[in-house]
Image 1 (cartoon, rainbow, N blue to C red):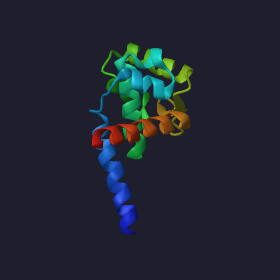
Image 2: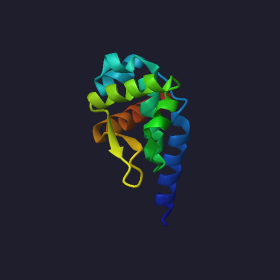
Image 3: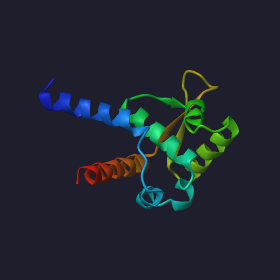
Image 4: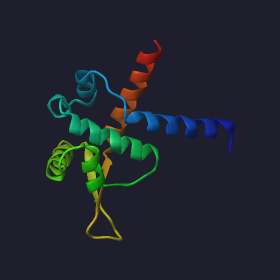
Length: 127
């Protein structure tokens, strides 16, 4: 494996570790994703961060795990996931091996937008 590939893996792993604690102006988050009213609430942001961290770590997140990440009661977590799904920010995927389990992932556009946001945050921090 090349040194460049190893460096890229380390960078992704470090970003994944830091994502959970990252906060910044909610208006900046919302403007980047174009969904101001939805991201004013922390549960939505917490779910998106959890899903991005999982994506970077190549992990699959169940609906129940995403609800736990929102730090709200399960019924509220499900409402938030449905709201994120209606806005096209997340996708629900049935588990092919277990019909009782559903996974949740970021939509491709949301993944790109969140990555752009954190690149912007990184530039903001170092400048």
